[in-house]
Image (cartoon, rainbow over all chains, first blue to last red; front, side, top):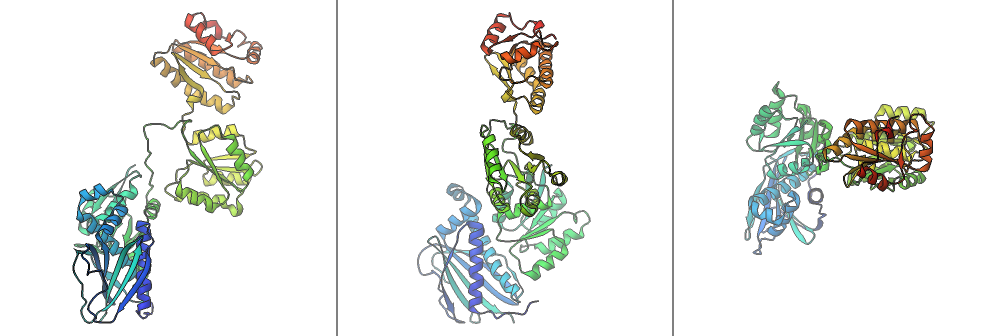
Length: 175
Length: 386
């Protein structure tokens, strides 16, 4: 096993930026731009995610467990989630409409899985072996996700052709 | 042979992407949502390849792989991991259980096809399997040659065809071209630096999209060693420089399995017309000869009872052409088809010079031949009874 590098904010930012870029570029032909980060010290309450508006969001979640444990939430506004799904599966609007929300949930779950996979593979190669969990999806327009007090939180925003993608990372060091 | 590929992934999205990726290839895609379903389908259908995810509910990919490799019936099925679980240690650990390849998500469909193509002999589905391509259909031809004058010469020589003939001068350009538009046929100069043509040839043969593309070697006539090497490697044909364009075109048609009969045979108002070109090389004679019987039978079947054999464009009469004409007349007789010959003054004079052809009667134009065949006054058996 390689010597473990220190998991600091620049490393996390580097891994998540690379992972989001790889997934959006490879699977959707989009090149997302890093907009900004909101590093949160342990235990802060309000996440810097767009939960205050009434817009409908589709949020994919995948965790990783091992030497380092954590969860990543990927926030996409619902119209952008639809657009990504159509591009990913080569579907028309009408076909997607007929298929229902389940297809969108599955597609965003898989995009999240790939993104978190890319992020955690960076951690593995940095000396923190861990495994992915099964994705889940959260849908809604007015919710907030709050970490437990021992978790560190890092929130990063990306822009993909005018659409916002937010990666909300919760990290808990292994016991 | 139609291959069976089993995709085992809990994500329907991934399964749809896999199906989409293989849509244009001659294979069936089977789907399973977890390791238990995957093992059951593998035992039932014996797929030729399994694409396996790792993180799945019920039974994950590592457990399924372990069970698969422990089963004497199933252990021979090749497995490619298709998973977001990367990381050096993970990959090495799983590779030890026995996988043929490992593709980390996110992935491009082309990368998946390429990896699958290394395991099974994937063949692209023909877009129009029922209809043979003809000489009048378009085709993409790529010339890889570092001498622009050769590219120009070939383009000029083939400009009467509907083919799009494009040239590049390096391996890199050729690879880019093939990734965007896999050509119908390639011509590669063996004089590319550092044996570039042989390297490129190998790359083309490992790429699913160009695995079956005919590839011709362009080589100087005196470079016998290179010609032998090209034959050993498996080039579809060797074209020597200086290039005989007619011969090249003929070989290209053959390699692309083009129906060239329309060049020589046509139907005009109840008549079958066979027209020989100005230069009737041995390959042209062979081509016409191959089509002859089928075309005459087809005409008889369609109700045509008369045929015009038009050789007025022909410059020189040689034994190959004479034999072909005898074969044509014989075929007509067998199928009781009336026929008449059309020739130019030079050919008529040449025919008078041979014992076997001196009694042949020619008309000056196709119209004249048709008119006389219509009256029943032409094509009396003695026309061609030599």
